[in-house]
Amino acid sequence: MHDGTITEAAAGTAKEGAGDYDPAPGVVRVWFADLAALSAHREAMRALLSADEVERADRFMMERLTDRFILRRGLLRLLLGRCTGRDPAGLVFDYGTHGKPGLAGGPAFNLSDSEDALAIAVAAEGRIGVDIERLRPIESADGIADRFFHATERAALQTLGPEQRDEGFLLAWTRKEAFIKAAGVGLSMPLDQFAVEVTPGAPPALLEIDGSLRGDVGVPADWSLFDRRVLPGTIAAIAAHGTGWTVETRVMDASLSPLGRGAG
Image 1 (spheres, rainbow, N blue to C red):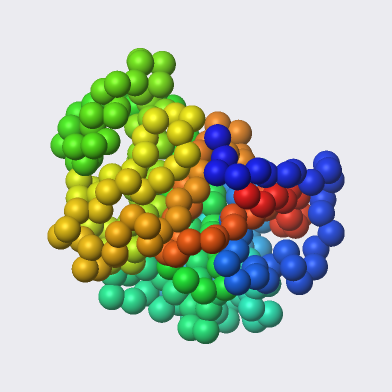
Image 2: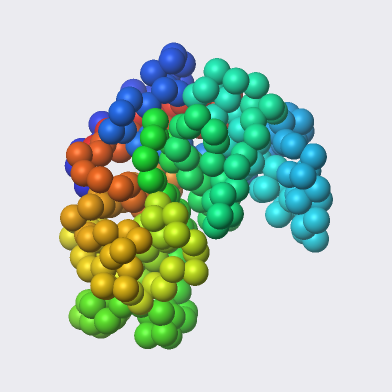
């Protein structure tokens, strides 16, 4: 269910080069990783973290949550270090007004994880967001939708059969989260003030933005929305401000090299 065509590389680790880490203008490159498969890199990733990140990691009460934080933040630093040609351990993040991390001088980036599935979106510049979720049954989907979703989305979800309801809900959730993160106006942005396409099989789209939000984020035509299903059992949504964007994907294997690639 892709917006465009993805051509996967032949099996085997792709040869690394500057092009793997330096996205061209108008390209969002999304790196996917299975954190469980990269657990052997935990200590190497921990060594890249800043003192405050190590402190945050050690505050988790469960070891698996500590490990996930270390891996995802370490991989983010490693990837951004390769993109910028800078020491990953020396990168200093700016958390901005709403707490969204940024890097002075770019590139633009955003991160999402769901259990052991990680997605990191990178672009030379621009407002981008990514969200990834495990495809799974959602027991409280109707209640969450009734309370938080836009009326257009609620109506569309009601037309889906039981076999499509969970997928439709997760399509809505990932697309809405990606858009909120790209908009950059804070995670308190009301979910019921904008609508996305929720029907499985329909192209991803931002359908409506209520008037109360337009001063901050504009109108639907100002945005691009994509889906990608790269890691087994997951769906990811990517939002980018503007039109004409291309999305490319990479998968980090155990050597921390790019494995698959594609565009759409």
